[in-house]
Image 1 (cartoon, rainbow, N blue to C red):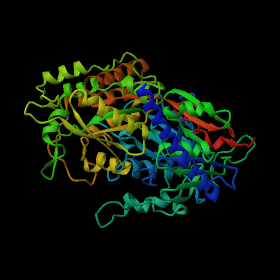
Image 2: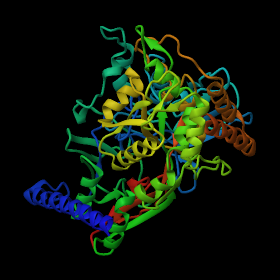
Image 3: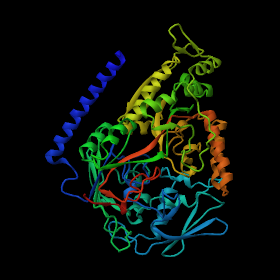
Image 4: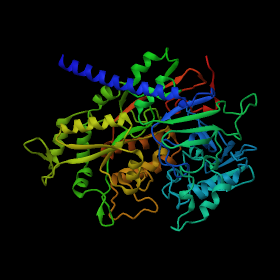
Length: 589
């Protein structure tokens, strides 16, 4: 009864807090700050942080604006899983599977009215994505075979472009979905160098760029950006797509992204009616489900979400400027496979599912998304077993003092800092539980949520971190995450090489299993037989499970609430509610 009373009191406190925030939100919007006011053809959504760049090639994180502002030659239909024409009207694959010739649509234009041509495609691939002076996440997905050669991209004529590869590459077509950028704006920024000897492109189109200077080819262009407040997108007047009656798409005039401080704030704003959609975190599912009819919205459930959430240790054993990236004492722990296994056994996934995800998720044990055809259903996870965790630690020379604190063989207390991005309530809750769970096996975790931009800088530039919780998106094709698994990949974050332009690292070591996973990703990409490809990727999943560079946590269900006035929703876990945004309409009841 005492526990029930305490729980009731906590719920009252939480409810009071929400009422205060809810009242404040209503007050603000009653003062004319509602972004939907006065424009019925406007879609309003929320994001948790400001964008980091307006440069599509340099972007490494989410949220970003590029799903609205750019398109590639092809696009994946998330309902069918097949690729469809986008900027290209058609393509032809050679019999030997070593080349594709794309034919562009007629009369394509940029948002400034200039023609979009084959020259833009060639420029984008050869001078941007494949330029080793320009760091980007796309380059690794374009590497082909053991040689890691890149495709040759060349002009056939004014409407056709040819991609040629040295050997078969199964995800070849997917690789041509990358955003195409304007040569007439960017070429000079690539060829000219700054005082530091680097291309001016690396500092071009930052978030301080006036929106009218951003030239795009997507359905929308950026209209305005107010830091920490909102982004407003408006229809691109030169967008290529039209409906069957020859009306230019998109139908919705404006899209607004409200920048909110937390998922709690976005829930309050959605309930107040100031947001048109929201991704639903499990803790609010029951509340919103009860309000579905009264609030005139629909909750969509796409099943297991694509992507993964995981805990990772910094396995980089190198040093920079004479200083170890990771404390050598802790590095020995982190690079011990049984230590990582003990951590996995010490984390209670079922408790996470029940308490944090409210039963709306399942244990994630693989780097490949559950809904992908390449997911290995035979993967066995690390069921919660603190006694087995302690046994593994004991085998590696760890021991406990009289207070039950874990020490290593040299009597150093086992303690590390765990980071995640502040404002993400689910990840903050995961970190808090991991801190509690690992305390049961004598490990002290200093859990510290930090700003997302600071976290990204630590993971990619300074490499100054010990452990973190983060998530990766996913898709049907495993090669999309090859840059995570290639040892020299741009997102090989658990043992990251230095980014271009950053100081070198001395003494970085690549483990045998690490190299093997990278090689298997190469083999998997060049194998054209689907069943043989599955076997290759099954082996990568088993190796990832055995050596645990990433300790996977929970795969939530893909849940979103969308106002019923938004018509034409075809929901899927892969594409969400707005993958066909240009075809959606707003109709008031």
